[in-house]
Image 1 (tube, rainbow, N blue to C red):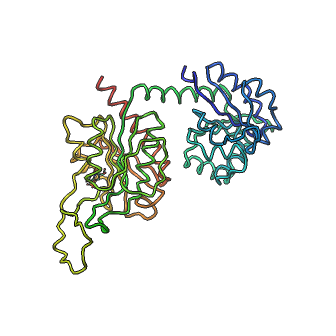
Image 2 (cartoon, protein in one colour):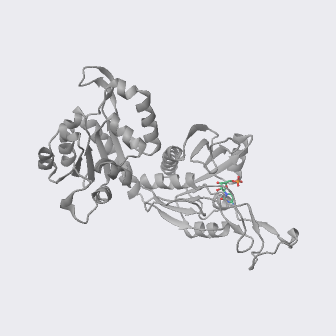
Length: 408
Ligand code: C5P
């Protein structure tokens, strides 16, 4: 049932397993999905456009510069049409192109421009799969957020045996069914989340402010992942350089006070993830005119910003069902973070060591320790913030569903 009325964009790659795409089209159709197909140049060597269009009941898309399509941009319209994009088979060469960000034909251009979940279904010889270059591309693509279905162990068309065999159309179907089932379930439950991210700016006068180096990337990626899991997510973000996707609702704020007000407006919420690096203090008064150099420094008085996480944790009326805090530390990471977790009444604390170079503040990478209320810890080794976000979002959802089960 979960595939009923789903729109699937199927990219057929250039490998012997391409013929299995015909089976997959029929299986998906039986489940009520509609299918559009992009046939790559090398895919055409294995299956014909005629057999696909007869089966899919739709024209087959092949060329990025298709003159039949005046005024329409297929690489945008197709990915916006789709609920999910599949690449079957995904060859070693296609993986290499995607990991470089190539956009030299319709298929790669669609994928680069896509705002939907992309499932890669690899098929290749075992040595090709295990080659360091392919494994490096595999890791890169996971970090970019692509999902892999397979490959599995088995006998290949070339006669060799090992990992590299494509998942069968039925395995692909069952993976997709599970994926959409969970997504539909979460959507139906209408679960809401707020995520705070980025730094705040506390203006001293019209041109000077107190702030920090937070890039806001980790919170942004978490918000995207939660939204992709089917959670109604609002990102409340301080000033960043992020080019925000329109997949999620964004409320942009500048100061800690504005962030606090924006959070309060969104209450009640099921889940709150406070990843923002809110400035701890702010000037008592913002001067209207630019302060002259001769000002005595003691004239700038500071006061504390409201602690949003603590407010949520202590709020009897509107405490989110699941509250997640972040804790940046340079020493005694776990014990300090646990103390913070207790003081601010969080359910999960995500700790990171900001003394380490190349992770955390102003970096695309992170390394975190997830601490739960029972004191269990789980370390996620250095990886892209997107990868860390995908693990955190799944953990957050599982903890939320556990809490709900215990409440019911
Ligand atoms: O105590 P510390 O600032 O290290 O705690 C960090 C956690 O508290 C983060 O989750 C951060 O988003 C949150 N926080 C907040 N409001 C503040 C300060 C911190 O929500 N004013």
